[in-house]
Image (cartoon, rainbow over all chains, first blue to last red; front, side, top):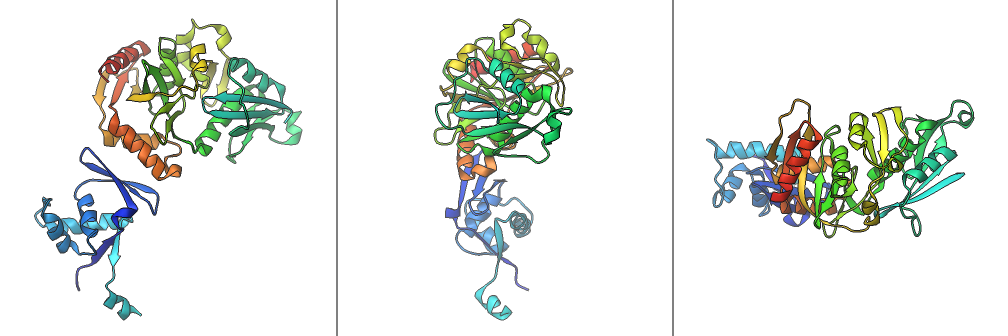
Length: 102
Length: 286
């Protein structure tokens, strides 16, 4: 089975403020405030380019941010699960999958 | 309502109605010198008998208002004053939309504002009242009002409710400024103190906040100060705000700009004099 693809709200729908290495994020749709530690803000920035899986996210953020983990894709997948639970990212279904379900 | 008292505290106008004369008279005495609102009032607090027949048989006071908590405990009539104060708190906490409301004390000196917030028992009311007697302008002990557009601190100098042992610190004030001693309240023995005249006269003057303090009181605590990071200050202030969530992005903007623009410190103290020394030291550095 292919790894899950994730999507996030476009940057225009959130407001962020950097404070001492943490990112305060106001999510306009839910009205909730989140306090994010790296690499969560970097993941959201990577997803602003379009839906992606953990491997692709590692590749996208690799240019400016080093994921300090033995298996970066696993570490990113764990953060994706947390962001999904917080309602900031969700599983993206590709058009072919959506058709298959219909 | 047979008895009405209208009261302006900073930018907020209250109308307190009561079926009984005593609480309204007590409020009038306590709030002597406060202006009367020009026009319509922002919030209404009504003190009513819990059941019609209880007005005559063992009267108790129930709070009613624009916002009503169904389980707001009825209080004996003798504590109608406390009920009115609690009603005003409740209206502010639930209904205020024009400011970011922080459960905090605020003071001003030399054109700069000091915010103090902490858990119940941290001593912010006592410290604010004490500093208000020692050269600071008292701006409020319960709610600090932060402007949503410009981040300025607006006074809300209501009377201070002094609890139990802190009453002894105010033995020297003019007795005219003290309300009746209320015993057996949910918070123990309480006595209200009217802020000094300057604080009332300047209740429309806002100020720029300059320092955030998180005091902690404990008899066994050694005096200490500690820097509080902006992210921690943000988190603690969202918890100290009654309307942060309701204000949405406006609240987020006001609070993030507050914590990113001023220093925040925690202080531990075991008596008021110690706290005053620590505050003076941090104030001179801020």
